[in-house]
Image 1: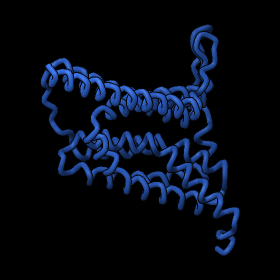
Image 2 (image 1 turned 180 degrees about the vertical axis):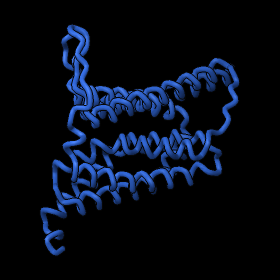
Image 3 (image 1 turned 30 degrees about the vertical axis):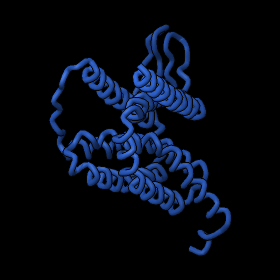
Length: 262
């Protein structure tokens, strides 16, 4: 036990906690948007329970990865259609690929709903089942966590350090979840940006799952979207939205002053 509190282990723990915080951004955004599907009075409860149970599931998955990592890398099935598509799909690739499809579907569904509302169509949305949304949050949290768990395993083989980082990341997400949701509620324009970020997350997961499965389309290998590219696109999207909103406010203020002079 004394060997745990070495400088190397403490440094690794700090690195893993920062990694959990960075990689958990898209996860937190998904939870905040998904929780809006239940009744308003139960949304905060769903976020806390969803993150808490997801952390427990992460710990179990991490233990499985440590013990039976080869099972996640072994080929489940292969596809080989000459000149069209080929790939060797393993459990890791399938989970990430399916998760990407689900995220794309969820993001596109919400975006289409917002477009319908903008067009003047009043669509009554009944609250979804609490249990259904909770299970969705837990499952997608597990999908999001694959990258962070594999990255953690690349930094250390100490389960206690990895588990501590996961728990710390979960506590941080619980503390921030309500604030993120409240911010999106007060700044609806950023909700649109958030949905497009989720769409990008889906694309990134699809590319990652394809890469892990060594997928080739029309003879070309599918390469994963790099994290640096992903965060750069997010930064550009947010920057454009901030500049556009401020410019729009300036134009409205100028129009108001012109109206008063007339």
